[in-house]
Length: 389
Ligand code: FAD
Image (cartoon, rainbow, N blue to C red; front, side, top):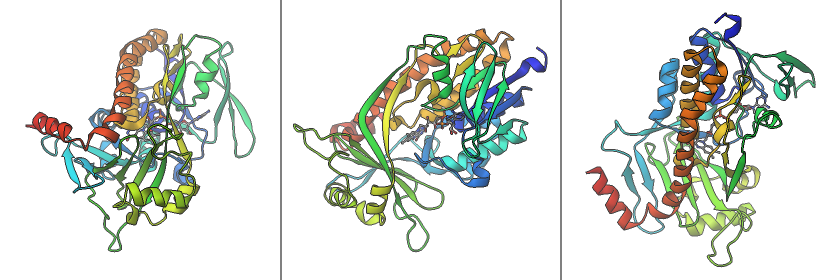
């Protein structure tokens, strides 16, 4: 394959786009990555959602291959298990494994993205910020990009496009008239809101740092993941609408900061004193929708392929969306390396990864029931204890 032939254009410099760019550049590819937002290293991170993420071994593998693992782990906080906060009774830690070799890690999305961008640039990836994919002419093989900051636009030639542009992928939308993707989105009917537990007065963590905290309450729940600056990001998951039969809170009924305080006082009383800006954050932070995106096809011959959330967005309850996106990056880089036939590489990539992503999507949905409903069930706890023996 000629050097010209080893050129690829990635849409999105988020988690998957930056990692894939590095893995390909390290294999001798010329890589251009176009990102709609500004450079977070200059302007601060504008992510706006899921401030921290659980990183598991599946995701660490890709980071290790890219040479990014040490820099990421320097900012990660270990989570040994679930720290369950029942409404009555003491908190209890349910370990993920027998010892600290089987743990997951809390990483800050913005810090992780910056590490990945630095490593991508060092590997020779050309990053283009403030370039939003606005349309694709697949016959002429040109992609149009808009700069939302200054209103300018440009057209760029490509050999193949990779859609790492997230759940609302513009590349996916551009592919649709050319190939049947079999796209369907299933909304969960529950949404989330993020809040913050600040550091304690002595600068330390306010609650046990090395755990993923859960307040399970049947049809809804709250979780908290630690950040390396000694804060926790709290995520409240509630149904969107009231259920007249089963009752309980919903985003329709918990609207104001005062409503949120009343909810916490009743259902999450030990969390309430930890969140001093509860009312403000409830009213000002966005409410995020949760959905699963299914596609039957991820590519358009040799001209375009999707990965990460653009191909298989999932609900966050298994903490595997990013981990799965990182696995995609490793798989796609390997398939592209194996053959000069890109359509073949994209087809093989889909054949390997689509069934895996479906399985993880299903487990993510199942884990919502487990987290909100079962982790404080005595029978379940006994079963878990026996499994770990
Ligand atoms: P994204 O991270 O969405 O990145 C897409 C990038 O493309 C962004 O930089 C965006 O600006 C850019 N972009 C978008 N449109 C365009 C365009 N038109 N042109 C150019 N650029 C564009 N996963 C885990 O593994 N562990 C967790 O604990 C976890 N927790 C989560 C909690 C919540 C509440 C949510 C919502 C998700 C969670 N996830 C978790 C899932 C994880 O966030 C995603 O799976 C992951 O971000 C996917 O990475 P990505 O690179 O495919 O997409």
